[in-house]
Length: 559
Image (cartoon, rainbow, N blue to C red; front, side):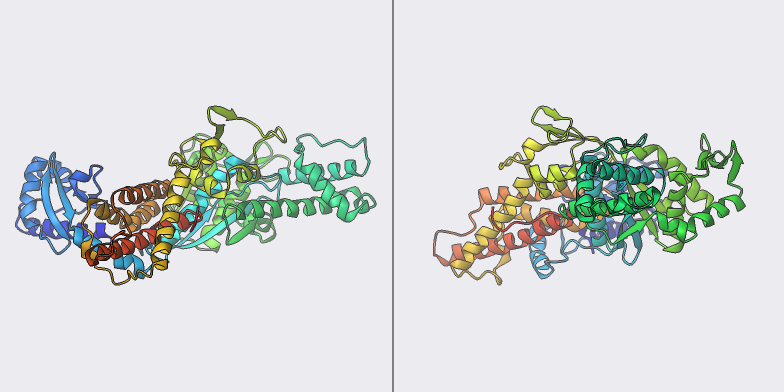
């Protein structure tokens, strides 16, 4: 049970007693009734119940708080309960009760922080899903890290998670990619006349891709019919691009459980099934030679094209079939899509079409990953020095490393535009949060190695010797990890884990500056304190490692 839930139960029990006595109105709350106050002087938790009851009871919040207070029973965990203006009931936990929780951390090093809030619920997180027509750029990479970390958080909160990449391997863009690959291949083999099609892909990466194909296959594809050559070469090029995408993502610890092909929606009949459903439900109409989803009937400001007048399906049409497949064929309880900023306008119509298909739109959550601006100090990096095109994920990994990529992309809410300072990401100082957090872990590892070399055994340490303010503060911060995971899973805010990790590292560094871990003295009393502190930092190391791993980052033993 979360400590927050334990405190909630204490106040709910007090509320019930006061309600039974007729002192306050009978009311229930769906939202959490306790939260952590921003000011540590206000205790570990604060309840806003008196403020929420004020209007209903027609009483002042402070009056309600003072009525409730005598009905709230304490237990061995509560040190103090008091009323805090303008109408909060605040709780402070006993230091030694918290200290004893160190053993809980050490007994569950691989799972500490996990909760069962969403146990057995099935969720799909679809993210990245970039067209496989070019290398991943930094904007897409941000969505990759957000989706990956969010999936890890949801898993830690009890969900059965499936991570999915949707491969757009059908439609006009793929056709243009295929033709562009063929042109670059033909040019490589000496055709000076052939030109890229209108709207074709210009990137230098295609020249390199064509070089690989020509090296392996020679001029074989110039000896067959052009259409067959385009289709075959394009498919080879597509697989090469996907191989590069997979590698780039793996190098920043982004893995998928499933890669879903858009083309399968057409071969399986799912696409036609959805068109028929919309027609039968009266949500499609033919006009101007095209087929439209009549989203205005559901409150949208305009209808949306499903099939163009040339007979080709829109991206929206296949996306509708894809989401119907998620909910109806694969039965996910919840689906979370992480989309780029350029898809923001796509959200309302997707919600509307879910409604049209009798799928609760609330089961679909769409997070928008906003734009990224790369900087080197004060200088804005607008393009790759090597290619003059968008900076790719591969280039960013090469320059700053995968851990910096992940942490910096996580450090801001997905819906906020962000600046990524590559100069800061390379600093080996406390200014760089990645270095600051990982150094805390490495420093602890170093101290524990030193203690082992000195044959100090701390597993049976006397934890009640931990009384220093910095020691207790570190424990308080460590024990917040389950709550951070639970909150992040409920609110879909992976950035909270990045912030927490920085706060935990700060709590350790403050402890380290104020409390010598391994005493220089050999007297028994000092040795016992050293053992207790070693056990404390071993637990802190467990929590730091868990947080780093959930964020997809390394927890280095040395730095």
